[in-house]
View 1 (cartoon, rainbow, N blue to C red):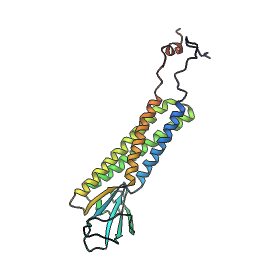
View 2: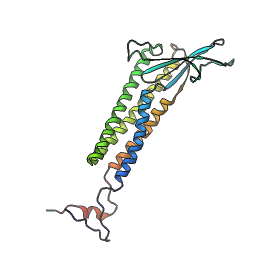
View 3: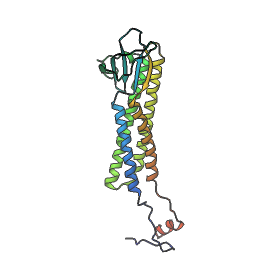
View 4: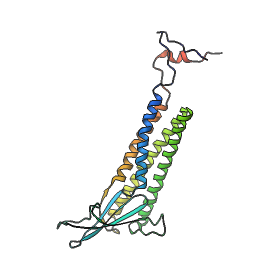
Length: 242
């Protein structure tokens, strides 16, 4: 076994491995787990956007909708107070009859009038597919990190960081596709929706992008080898020539 050599100043030479690296990896992984939790919450919930139709003056009920990547939920709201200039339905938190159904392009037996337009169907399928890629990248990255903890294989941290970065990029692309879908839906004359707002599932997706992308880059920087702080570290740690 090699005996640690000392620098000219008398202090022992540090190896290329940063002693605080495992702690940094665990802290970064803890934040990444929060991002993954937000990612899963965004993918499986149905509160990406809330849609409100125009409301006639003398009506007592209106039908609002909120949807996610997979399902559409409509709610017939019994309006208690309505101003003379009220032109939208909501908020959706008001009491009323609630009904949810999967999009018919995922389950042919279901019906969904909102997404009958071909353009909206393509947007919905694209957003869901890209979100699935994001979840897959996050799972693979987690497996790589767990294997690096168990086997002490630090080289797995680099691919893990790239998988997390790809997961963040995929979910923000899915967010943008969904945003364009909602905008086109509101601008279209074929739908009755005149007002929209983004809800907490949309916020979870945006937050997961920030955490996964930033922590993925941070994990890559942590996984890179430490540069020598003193000029003699590289020379003293070098293998002797034969």
